[in-house]
Image 1 (cartoon, helix red, strand yellow):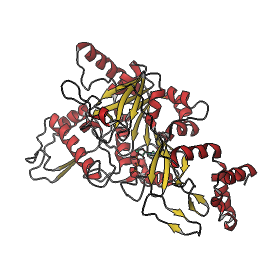
Image 2 (image 1 turned 90 degrees about the horizontal axis):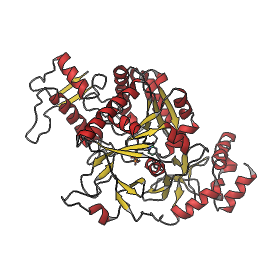
Image 3 (image 1 turned 90 degrees about the vertical axis):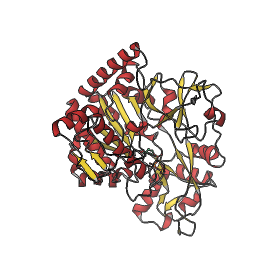
Image 4 (image 1 turned 135 degrees about the horizontal axis):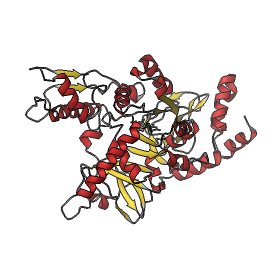
Length: 473
Ligand code: UTP
């Protein structure tokens, strides 16, 4: 190990990390040394002081206002014309290969408690297609519809990259051309014990965790993905999280408004279901667009209503963005990017001083993560567009309850039923309005209402009496 690194480790009181080093074989020693040498110890020490040894102070700007946004439907003639122009432009961008898509899939999915990367979770209600399969089939249809392949950048982490790639190779990339997909890994951060000491995950390794979805910006640069986009003429990136199968990956209106407004980073917003819904809040502070996490939003602001009783801070973030490639290039041009860190208190398994593996029952560590939405205030221009929750956002965070596998599947069925109904198919519904059967439409056939209408017309869809489930492809 380099003498400098050793000095820093001692200086910052982290020598316990070397406790088993002498007993390691060469490969083990090399692995541990490489991890320790990759750390910027001075910076890490100040992060520990700021975020671990004390609860970090969240600074909420004083002048917070609700962020302006484009309404879901145009509200006057001028806006109608703008939306039409934007939609046409968005289609044009898709047809000319100006758009790539980016899925952040490096998280550990702890709440879901599934043994494997979250994207491999079998989500679709009838066929149990994995999240990745669902997106892959959507991309196949996008290619047919717009005549150009949309390159798919998938961010994984060291913890799940191998299993993710395996899922694709085992399944022949679900029919996608493998050339259309690029996997790249995000950075990691060491997990830090609540006493400020880094944890060992094994005798020859730190306990490492992915560095948050904000890590995607630098990882795009480091992996060469940005350079490739530039070479291929890609200007815009459609960004989404791996746990939201309802996402509209190719959204012409959203893309078109982003481009017309010359926005550097844009966002979809949903009307919150209540003042404390667990979504980030879109706020404006001076000229900057910010997302204030639900847990940081001052209660009196969260509760404020306007004259007709509507929440003033109504706009919640489902983490759906369009980002200009040039913006990420600008942010990462020096090979560094200092987004703020967020502290997450977690239970992290570790090796104790006696070499025993400990699975903690209580919180014992802090993970530091950066968030993609912290790039919004750095953009010279931003744009927010309202969308309908039932058409865009069904996060799969938990097994049951709110934002769960259950609620996600219900929303997938509901969305597909509504598409069929709007195309003229009668769907039997129970007294509570819930569809009386499970319906799943393959994204290979239908990715929007226009497709649904054409599909119903061509295939003469009708629902067999008493059917419990229906799969349409
Ligand atoms: P979440 O914050 O919901 O985390 O990530 P998670 O890992 O999926 O689940 P929990 O909190 O451990 O239960 C939102 C999205 O950001 C990605 C996730 O894969 C998910 O698509 N993400 C999160 C990353 O890509 N990297 C990270 O470091 C964290």
